[in-house]
Image: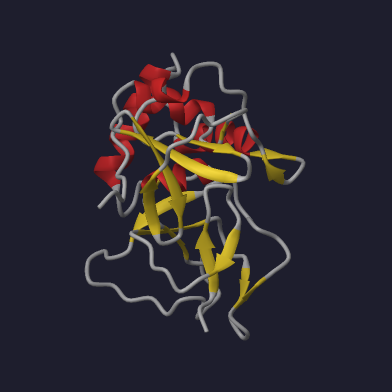
Length: 202
């Protein structure tokens, strides 16, 4: 039976057999004895996205009292959930993200903790996923942005709309009525400034 450790664009953590291209964490949120999640869904404001393979290291998923391994379909999904690149295993990506963040959000180059504080306010509303107003046509969003409409999640990429699922993306023919932003505004600005999200389109 798959563990409950796959993350949706809404930031929800579920059990599914589908694999992800990235891992990451929000601190320690599991019981290693039972390999089940605790009631809390984060223990740190540093929600990060990591590579699944780094320097040949192996981790036993939910096997110890270390960070809880979460998995994402791709980087666009992790962004929608409110995660950012890890400065340890993805240093080059994290530095590029930080520089684009500074440009896109008209700020001095931030520390990781400063980005985490902004993201924490943008991704949550009383402990639930914060949805943001969409002030432009969805197709005017940068590649890698995600929105929600009628309970579904959609990726914007290559001037097209793609319906998200844990299994991957499919082309969507929809007007995205009353769509709202899933991806935090500060990350939208970062994507506009040139950071290229790694998207799992076949």
